[in-house]
Image (cartoon, rainbow, N blue to C red):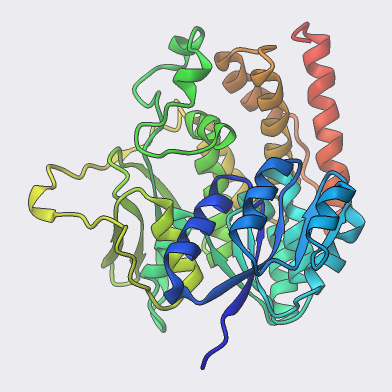
Amino acid sequence: MVNNKSLFILGASGNIGKQTQEIILRNPNLKYDVVGISVGKNIFELMKILKRFKTIKYVWSINVITISIKEKYPHIQFLHSDNTIDKFLKNDPLAFKLNAIQGSAGLIWSYHILSNQQQTLLLANKESLVLAGQLLNTLKIKNQNKIIPVDSEHNAILSCLEEGNKVHKIILTASGGPFVDNKISELKDVTLSQVIKHPTWDMGIPISINSATMVNKAYEIIEAYHLFGIKNIEVVIHRQSLIHSAVEFEDKSMKLLLSNPDMKQVISYALSYPKRVIDSTLKPIDLGKLEKITFEPIDTNRFKVITIANYCVKYAHYNSFSVALNSINETLQIYYLKEKINFYDYNFLLIKLFKTIKPLKLCKLQQIIDYHKQIEQEVINYLKQNQYL
């Protein structure tokens, strides 16, 4: 009898974390036991997860867990605060770790995972590689670790790779978000509900906003470079979100992955990689009923953040550019959600503030974290000086 694999779900109360739980519960063929979870501040969701998975032994949260919860689950080790992250992860060194934490907060988790030996990191946190791709890749090689992307585009690229055949170019597809046909000048009065209404994907608010600004695709360009070591990356508009990316080989042939826009398929493949496990709930595509698949060149004058991402890749040895891009975006998004800036200004300020960034090599984790905070403060100061705040 084969023992089940152990799994830590980091960001278990978020969108990807919840979908991962659903997949494991409905598909025992994956053979996973959820033994560890992190949940941030959502204690209500934590209680639901603990009832769902009797295999959980370790819990990490931002808030201190109440005595009543600890008494109800005496067999579980509850931890909190950043200085216990490594201890939490080392409770089961051979467990697979899914990092589905949102934003730059996910970096420290990826760092701790890859600092240990023979780890498998299922990476749904784009920001880890955007902020510290070189550092994390160094740890991956040094400690004989694996990184499996849990992102539809990079997961598709992983599917398309061929052993022994060099990739000439990566093609990332982008739906274009809700405003692909609008000029920037037309976005001054759009509402948050319009911004987060993605045409094909059902995502959380922060990622939906990043999709509307195309920052999400900019992150994916940088992420693809660090995952696959290729700088030749092209973005095309593909409104149907059925082709999840493609690779072009040296003989100019191309492989593309076609599937419905459903993250459960992506998560399932990451959990079972390199095999594919049957999931009867996933819907196939009937090619006979498929009306059209279209591709359009992306307008980089309209979506200037794509040019910024290409710049970050071109000068990847100066990672201050990609760190600053993330810090500027996260800070602007906070004040956009607080209604201090409108969507038009959000796009405008992102480009304007990035142009002030100087080339720096940030080699250590603390340097990256400190610089991220420095840029955040500079953005806040700019907003105050220009009477946004």
